[in-house]
Image 1 (cartoon, rainbow, N blue to C red):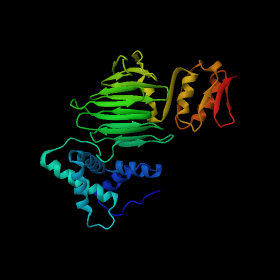
Image 2 (cartoon, rainbow, N blue to C red):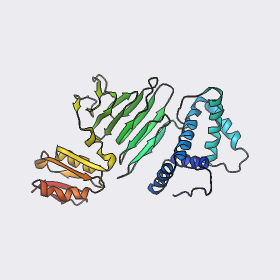
Image 3 (cartoon, one colour):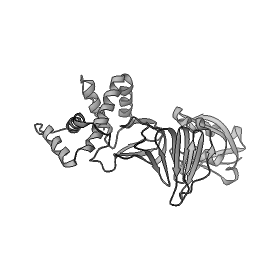
Length: 323
């Protein structure tokens, strides 16, 4: 469902509207595009939106029962209080506490699971957290964000994200993804969580990657990467091509002498149906660059580069087989 935005409202009202809409569990791509355009139109828009996020986060400093009482008092005169009115009431309560003694930015106390952000097939989105950190989400990615007084936690349930973390030595930033955990205080790094494993690559700063119980942790510096297998084992640290790994942020797929099995796995993330590869050609090496939103071009080019052909299977998926 598309919600009409209020006409002739102030920047503050617009920010409150978008903030309430972005907390809904489902939001269509058209509305998300309108929000991104509004955010980019004026620096005042982003500043007001981030202020609301911080005020909302600060409500965790107020006992839950007291906060509910304050919010009910704020909206009692209204016959049918809207979600935006509730936000304004909660933020007003948080603001009064901030003025009294300051606050640490925390997340919504009424949402035990934290804030969830998700992208669909072919969608990329940037999310700004209450502490100023940003997440660039690749397609088919789902994250849950939970902050408290001692830590900042993001659960990467599936997909891929680039993290740009605001330094805070008092509150480490932790990314949990399947079998592994990444801990930092401030850095830029990429995390990919597939069904079979977890892969971490660092662009700047330093991170610590831990696996399952008893597995050795690995410190990673800029240009380092590591894989955590499904059973929680942390592999050896290797030098990686971080520019190729994060090319998805520019809508590109970059392959540099990788086996076709890996190409098929990566391409499948950008298609409705999976791309399969026959065992006899799975180890053939491939190098090229393609647009992530046009994987058909890659499939058309493959037979001109390698001794393979691509066939369509009855279920609509494709398979790379020997020529």
